[in-house]
Image (cartoon, rainbow, N blue to C red; front, side, top):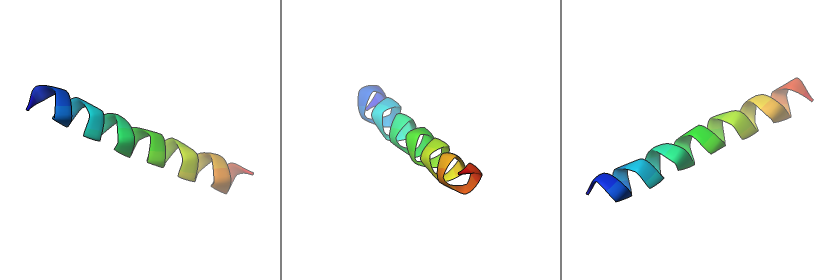
Length: 25
């Protein structure tokens, strides 16, 4: 469960960063 949660969190983080990057660009 912890492993899945960690991966899911990382996915959300990556999505947020990508959104910020696209907005910044």
